[in-house]
Length: 331
Image (cartoon, rainbow, N blue to C red; front, side):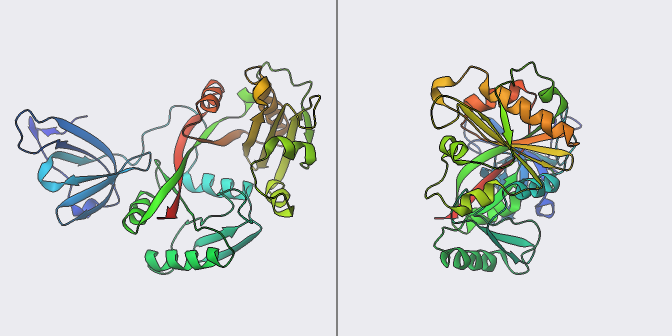
């Protein structure tokens, strides 16, 4: 990380650079003997009263005293990708939203309020793509009222870590007292290598609807009802995969939503007693082959940051992180 000009460290950023991606170097304890440098890279989300706020790729914000700065510069908005299909944040956000369609939605300017009886945060959160048509604080209050009228907590889905993502909104939510509750990665990959994997797909069944057995393995909902199947079966072209077992619930399941060039992999679950036997890979390979038949060429999925088993599986399939998303809730 090079900050020097003519051999001297320089601060080459100012409050006019708010909203840009920057790299800054500061002293951990300005002026203290033996103080060390700390480097931070992220979006400069504010610079007020002598304090900078830089939001990192993972969504966390770092507050930095202006007096501790020893160097700083604007850097490219996102590093060049080395693998996987080209994709913009907004394209992936809209494809992801179409894969988890709510039962009810309402526009708030260019934001969208979404509700589905509380089934999944993705279908029960604000999707803030664009301008809400009013100050952010007022828009958030309107959202809280809208969700309260439906007996639901208010969530806002915010993304960070790629060109065009929402670091400034994430920082504003933090300033207004909203807390980040869940974070996940959005990963992308070429689809053909997933379909070409040497996996035993002979036991994988593909259906257009999710039946009671499929739901018995999924179980990521409270009260079963039509709102659950409505969300799960929504999307341009939806497929459900299952590996039957001897019991009521399948040994493994998965869901794929084909949307133009994209195939989204969701709800991949395996009976804990049958994990590490290749069932998740077989489910994804079978779904990938069907998506390829429908003309898709790229894959996406979402994985929570702490799910190490799933992250390792997806690493092996060639998935790379494109950006992260977070659900914020009022404190």
